[in-house]
Length: 261
Ligand SMILES: [Mn+2]
Image (cartoon, rainbow, N blue to C red; front, side, top):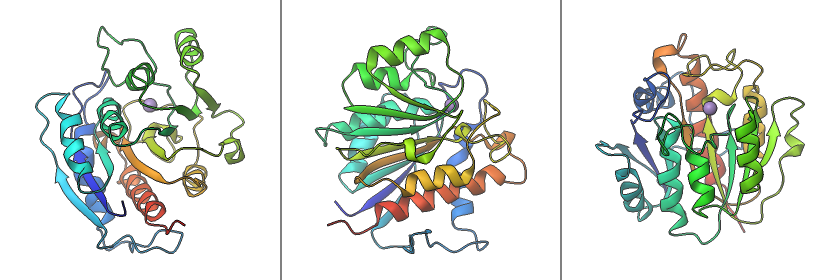
């Protein structure tokens, strides 16, 4: 399907440390539409396209509604979800897996988010990739920018066959080619806090904006869905993180709008 829909999920009830990510979708849109920049992605594609529709922000009363709402969005096109905290990725991917047999995930994050449960919640924002892998919703999970591994997460990664490309020694050439269509999940804390201070869990030693953008531009498989999560505007400095989140939206849209043969 050529069409793309943007859905805002202003939901941060599953955040373990700070709230605020629910305020992100509105700001990402504001910056994306700002006159400070045009809407061309770096690949030369104008993302201000008739193929792209913004469905606005969904009111989420209960976590599991996210899957049902995403299933409805999928009737209109491929989904880009603007979070919200990272817990939204599990229901969004589950919905996408219901229309695609096999998907691979390219996940950018300081954290693996593979906890079996966190503070007693199996659906915490620290757990979505454990739920995705145990549910068989992805054929392959490649995590990039990781720099917070503990013993439990290493065990979980091994159990689920997760491929981890750590921030230390990162080179975009380490990212493999994917056999299946790809879902891209970007947690804004993958970036070094110098590039993206507006996150709940600032973790120094992260990737640069150029490294992540080039990694996304290098994806050769079709992108069937994406999310941008964990931007916390209450922690931002002069909208620097908002600008980066909006830039990612533009680059992911540009990539998804590329003609494929
Ligand atoms: Mn994270």
